[in-house]
Image (cartoon, rainbow, N blue to C red; front, side):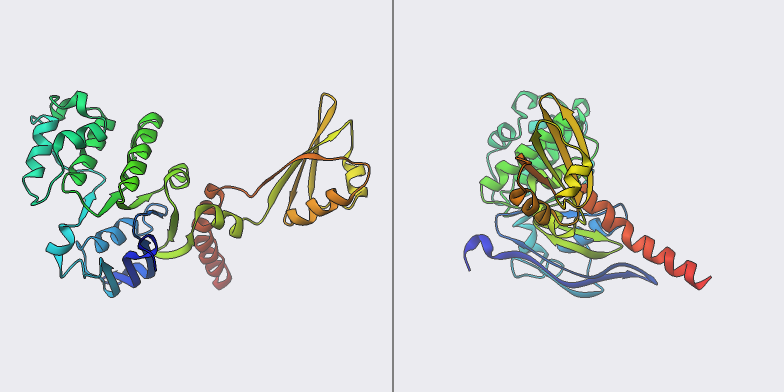
Length: 319
């Protein structure tokens, strides 16, 4: 097994109960060395509890968690020296400057990166003398990440790092995450932003009601779970839905005149069959094929609503 394929975080059948309330049910996942892994799910799905258990703040009710082959709850010192956490919010000293804040947290670590290097990397160099209370939301979020990076961790855990940020600040944050990965750092993050998961995560796990509903590469999951796809192409001249039907093109067909061409969209559950029909049909001369398999957001909504719909159906049947 090469280094990139080696798992640095493993979660095996993790469950967490609070009295009669079950928050996590048999959650299993692994995070490989050097990858960005995303934990997705609606509010209350168990994302934060999973992260807190991985970093050792909570103990499992059942199952096991290992970080770099150690129990994060029992081997706290070993894990905290190698893993850093950036929570959704943290209390900082408002009257300290940015560089003073980073130097303070650097004093807690035996091995540190040069504070000025971290500030430059997170684009906070110009704000180094600004007091924390005067920072913008995006600058404060970057400072929290800088605090996580100052100890040169092997693993960074980010709990909804872009929550509350404007679109430009979110994109800047994504660039920072990519740069950390380029340095060889493993990153585990939770998010409910589908564009964030698509842009920065190599693999994701979707949590729904405390269980893993799907896991894998975002594009692969969309292809596997999407029930329909849209095949788009152009035909020279004009055509009609009836003519396309005569070539055994199945699905919901839309035709739109576009100058000397006709733009055609076919929504189908079998895009390969549509492409084969078009390829071997004489007279149509289609070109410019595009196949869209839905989106990660479609998958997320479907998975998030599926258990609720099932539960409502069972209750209706019982009544």
